[in-house]
Structure formats: structure tokens, C-alpha cells
Amino acid sequence: MAEILKIKTAEELGKELLFAQKLDGGVLRLVLNNPPANTLSEEMLDALQGTFEDAADDDDVRIIILAANGHLFCAGHDLKQLTKRRTDEDGGKAYFLWLMEKCSTLMQTIVNNPKPVIAEVNGLATAAGCQIVASCDLAIASEDATFCTPGVHIGLFCSTPMVALSRNVHRKHAMEMLLTGEAITPSDAREIGLVNRVVPVEYLQQITLQYARNIAKKSSHTIRVGKQAFYQQADMNLADAYAHTAAVMTENMMAADAEEGIGAFLENRTPEWRDE
Image (cartoon, rainbow, N blue to C red):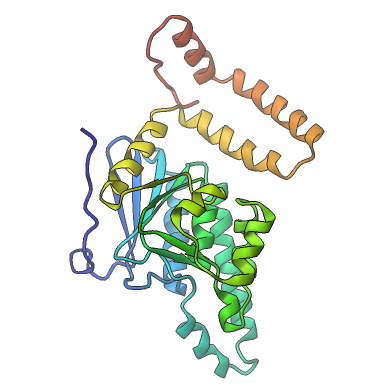
């Protein structure tokens, strides 16, 4: 039976903003630990950035799960932290730009990370919290999850979340979320392509872990090559995309793991990956 995890309480996790747990099979499980809102404060952005960078270079990590402690996945930026900087000489402008660029760097780090990243979403994912879900490669949501980009309600259009959102869902669905600021259900999120699966909350951790371990069994070299090529070709025209992926697939065919995997398939045996 698959391992069932219990998200620890804030008291059990202590004061760590981001709890990291290495599990069997090369799974790294990260837990946002700043309930109730789990905001992407300066400190949380730093913790996530450093952890994702470390994971990229850690051969023991084959896949990453991003979850949260509490009943709210992530409320986006810390508005109290932002508001305090309005007393700066420039009204906070330089700080706001610095923070938005910092957050944008994190989102690109997730996309560019050679390890697949799965968002395990329970509760509300709003604004930059919705952005981080959209930036992950896969997303599994509980039946209690909701998603929104509500900046219009407070006079702040969710422009940076829009980048990730519009690259995951159809334009009219993205614009509906951005213009209305209304929350969508997990079933709606699945229908428009924001999440992959919706599961009962009591099975969320178990099913996400099953997904992760299934992917982690594959050649890490193959996964790294494929993930990078996926995002590269997505922004190309059709001819360029085929030319690029033909070159990528040719190089992939020359890899030891491709030779081993094809051989194992033809010989009806389990492949022994060298991750190269």
C-alpha cells in the first residue's frame, strides 16, 4: 500500500517557513509552513528559491512535491509587508519592482528546474498562490481547493500571475479569472487545464505521492531532457518546434538510458537506468 503522509501542524514543524522532507524513491516534499495564509513573503520566496536551486543539483532528488500546512494553500504576496514600504522615499516603487522580479525568478526556477514539480493543492490558491500552482509541471487538487486571481477587487491587476495562468489555460478562461477575480472550483480548474486531477481531501497526499513515485521511477536524464524540450517548443512556431524536438530526440536516442530502455522493452525486462 502506498505511504500515507500526515501534514504536520505548525507546532510540530516549529518555526521553519518551509519544511523539506526527503522520502523514499527520490521524492522531495516541500511544505509551505506559514499558516493560515502561507504567503509568499520575502522570507518564503528566499526559502523556496534556495531549496529549488539545491534540489536541482541534488542527485538524490528525482521529483518535487509542493504542498502547504493548514487549510489554505497560498494567499499570494504578503500585502502587509508590501504596504509597509509605502513609507519609502519613492513610495515603495523600487521595492515593489524588486519583489515582483524576485517572485518571477522563482516561478522561472520552477519551470526550468530539471526535476518535475507537482503542486499538491488543498484549500485556496489565490493571486501569486495560483501563479505558483500554474508554474508547477503538474497539479493535484483536493475537492476543497479553489483558485482565483482577485487583484481587481483591490485595485491591483494580477499581472505577474497572468503570465503563468495564460500559459496553462485558454485565453478567455484566463481573462475571466483575471477580470472577475472570482474563485473557480477544482472541477472547473481541471476542465480549463489548471490542474490534472481532483481527489477527495483524505486521499490528496497519497495520490500525489503515487504520481511522484511513478514518475521518479523513470530515467532522470530522460525526464530532464523532456521537460526542458517541452517548455522550449511551446513558444515556437510549428516548423521550429518540430526541428528543435527532432534534434532533441536524436540526442536523446544516443543516451545510455534510451539504449537501455529500448533494449529492456524488446527483451521484456525491467530497465536498469544509469540516469545518463
